Image 1 (tube, rainbow, N blue to C red):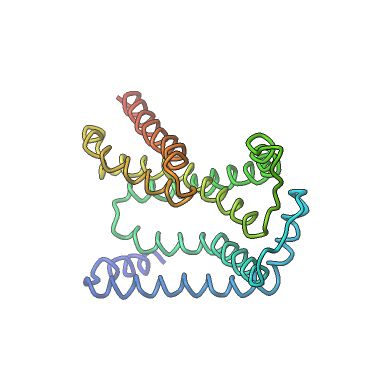
Image 2 (image 1 turned 90 degrees about the horizontal axis):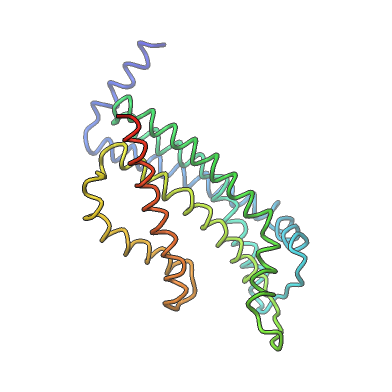
Length: 244
């Protein structure tokens, strides 16, 4: 078995550029195929049950406000469910493509970091989901004007949960990616000042994608993202000082 694994590793290392590209294309096609299969399963067997569960869990009275909203709601829930379920397979394909080109210590860091990201994203997502009804009531009852009535559409309601999932990913991925780049010395602590001028526009761009189209909302979301990056760099510096 060891001789066979060495032969496979040697074969991967000897790939030409076009063979690597073909290997990447096959892995991407597999990931897309798995997503499509899970999408069909979710659409026909899961989407209605999941929407019904979320509505009962929130305790809100929702409305369809367009002819196409029932269909589009099922498509949105199915696509998001398929994405969540197929992410582990996609990550596995990425690791299979990347790991042969890394050094042994870099492989350990990447695999360990992948496990940590899965654990923390799952834990954070569970907490956000469990408290989602309270978050809904907080935003509605705290910031809404009592003289104005509100009627939530199903699409708006589902967008709220998609936003929670994006928040979950951002909260976990920013520290993880920052640590990985610093650990592999792709990003160096000494050059943080130069990198910062690129980080701030990226955080503004991410905030613009997940917020309404107004500058204040974008700044309110972008500022914590930038602070999360700075805290990640600070923690890495502390860890490096302790290692010395």
